[in-house]
Length: 297
Image 1: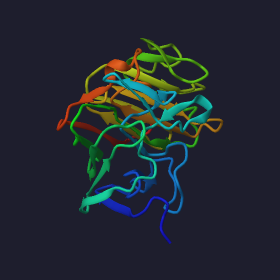
Image 2 (image 1 turned 90 degrees about the vertical axis):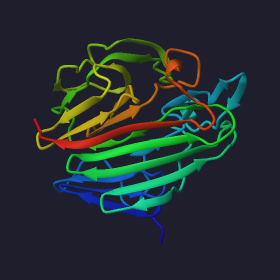
Image 3 (image 1 turned 180 degrees about the horizontal axis):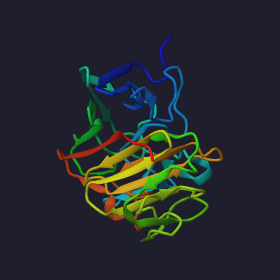
């Protein structure tokens, strides 16, 4: 019987093992010293709540699924019905070609061909690599068409802690995206609020997140979470100046830390629009992020 996420590619290095899926090119499992770091799903299950999804050619939401690019209006399929948005790109259910696999690395490729709402020909290659320092993910895309394309990338790993209340969080970002309550669409970028100010590490307590941040304190940033038994650090390079943080509810057992090239609704005019990447024909974009295990608090 075929798994819902296709072939499962296993890699390992030192204290780490990982499983990468054929469908979606997702990291389904990341284990350090025998401990699963991810809030994950089994090989015979489909992901829920965007677990571990690779989000391209845009992360987060496009309002009404509609945007303008070079004077042409495009209409994407609306897949977040309650908020009337196109959520998290076009990568649902896509099988990725295996380019290469070694003991420590998996390289996969997929071409996003033109479809309703998406005019381009985008070739994407994702590399998951393990080393003694954890997992590194390299996302390389090329505009293989004849005209410019809008582009954005994000990823959606969740990290399991059992109870978030006493997890210590370090979130080195100075700006927060203020959104409307009903649709979570951008209003403005402002100074980080007191509730979400974790620039100095402190316990999460009752803080609730479904929030995007930008203006990292250094171009290459790291968000650190430390529970009683273990810790996790998510890092990214300068091509990913945004992060979305989400705390699961009503059960506060996991936290998503999502590096992004741009904020929500970046395809449309507004406070996040300057983050959308214009890829010229033949142009390439490369983004790099990763995860490592760290000591608990």
